[in-house]
Image 1 (cartoon, helix red, strand yellow):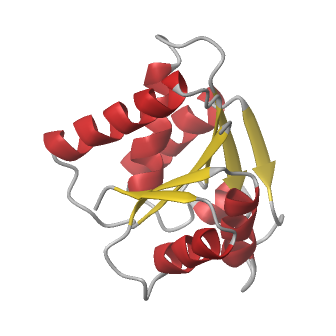
Image 2 (image 1 turned 45 degrees about the vertical axis):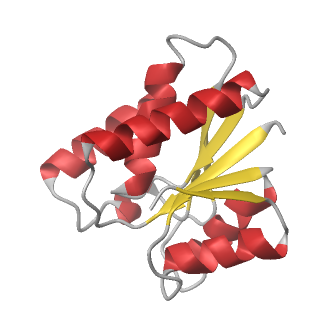
Length: 153
């Protein structure tokens, strides 16, 4: 196993316990040989995971954070508050690579981004409480591939 993708809900309570479970899970996968981490740049779970990878890069040389964005940064963050945009920009600048699926938001960009996350991964670390969501759709894509799924919800 060499690569992991992240998917999860935008609205969630980030407890210290959840944060610790995430870090422990990522570290276990790094120790098992994972070096590439793919995330979609959304608020909530994605940002928590992206920040974790950026922090763990200080301890583990060679791991990389790859952002697969559904559309341009300007359009993806259009309705976000100032704090969310500042956090996004920091992550964007700290990523090892950034790939944009479409230059403009459209009805297909989120689904394409989610499919691409799954296509590039051997494992999916998710926070999924409802399969009736974009996160649930992405988890279903991972189940269909099939790849290992670790649900921390």
